[in-house]
Length: 129
Image 1 (cartoon, rainbow, N blue to C red):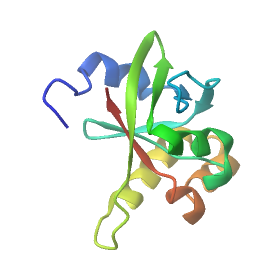
Image 2: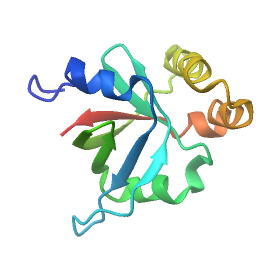
Image 3: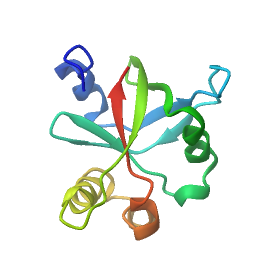
């Protein structure tokens, strides 16, 4: 990621204790309606998954341009959506599962769904644009 396109400490803190609203960009550049999604942090990166898997409307919308906007706790930022690395020797999925369980574990049903194999396939890193 280019040097100028990193999350600041304040931006990372803005999402630490909340979910975010995410709006993907259509092919013509306009934003789709925002949806609330669960976000987790790993090191200095932010990740989202589709609790409803790859057929969720917001996730399908991301596939058109891999660009959009997020908002949370006063933060509003353009982002790029980057597909996560799911190679067998990469422990990212397990690390993110643990982060989801810690942050959202008080809701066991949705937490189980967002850590499922199907949801893992939808993992996206949010890079500031």
